[in-house]
Image (cartoon, rainbow, N blue to C red; front, top):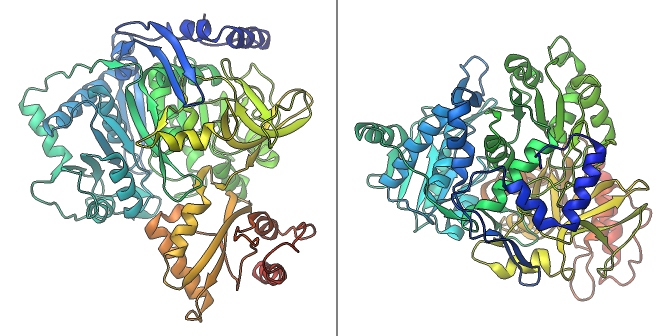
Length: 639
């Protein structure tokens, strides 16, 4: 079976086959990859524990599939094109052969620093090629990488290092992001005060920011590379891994304050990201593919590194931000590198659309053949602007729905093959079996219906556990509805059977395509000395999709509301990172609570949205009068 589906009729036939004979289907897809030893069994599973094993008995290394197997035919083909933050700085190109050489070299650096198969490595780097090299070097020697987004705070890094018991941290002196310089090493130093497990820190030079280097712990990337070069740059054969060995941990927000480490394993994740990448984007051998995500999120893992490289693609990564030095930067990159496939977030599209069409006009975007969106459902206005102004009405838009936990796309159009409707993720990819259920877990059948989105059968890229806490994985994803994976999303299935994601149904916000738990933000706000209690909800935001609205009960000490707001935002930035700062903070004397003490977030959500016409029955609240007071305060805040 070919990896790429070429017509809608073929999609329907293959989808049917994948549902009726899923193990045979995935075995055929897996034949397109290189295995040191084939599997004994395609799938063993139950969703009760949960226990999911794909391609058991197989032996492989994902880097041999991303690098070694391409070098003979594609050695001189660009694997990574890197576009720096500053447009005046030279871009870099790494061919497949050069990338393999650098990955082997850094694999030996990791070994020289005591890292072995099964060790956990925290990576906190800017969007530079060395980030890709570090990730693949970990995978090559069987170490488990935990990449932390460069916008997270010292506390967030410490939490992740301690949860995974990391032995080594890879960072840089600093990073560039638009006009900002981020002092990465300094943030790591603050984090490591709390981290006993870290024995070594490897520091890459990027910004030439002065840093503190602790003797016996901190070493420079460049010095470690020189040591390997003096050893004659020996090759570093890939470690043989079992199919279900851990590949990486990636932390994501949940409905409790503690981030959870989503675990992905070697074989299933490799097969799934490779298959979904080449199929959904209909990747052709000479195309340049540009994903604007950060590798600190799952999109960067699956669709900058592993998916594209496993398929021998040219993957472009960008260090900067879409609106610096001006709102034409993305279009300059497309023109400069003759980009064919552009994959970005609705937040970026909305902000570039708001900047004005003058930044697009005069830019040569004629090489674009396919467009994609990720992170949240795209609104219709932004979809049409993206279609007309960027795709010129000729490039199909792949509106992908998936999650950190799913590893890759679950519901998505296939470019040029399946129909597209603005704002719809459309149809499940082969091997994916979605189901809509009501609050009681009863299946809602037919079309023209909506409910909670679940998946009833495993797929190879799915989460295996939450690191060090399997019960949390079971409780979060598999206990809400029996024998189903619960996505946490609401979904509409229209009269044609097309799927549209309607948003989170749990206490998780989707801000600029990034999931942030309300409990996590509340915990951070509550750490401010003047805060007694807080409640956080999402509300519609014109650029971010969803904004963060915080209702805060403050002590009598605070007299200057604006200053206290700034202090609270500073506190949240220090504890989580700037990404979680509330957009609106409303001070209240009380919160709407039931007599048992539960905060009625449904009421707060309606008030935050400006929809106060139907708040439901408030007479059962402990203090119904507090609702009117909050409504008045919200009106004033809207001004």
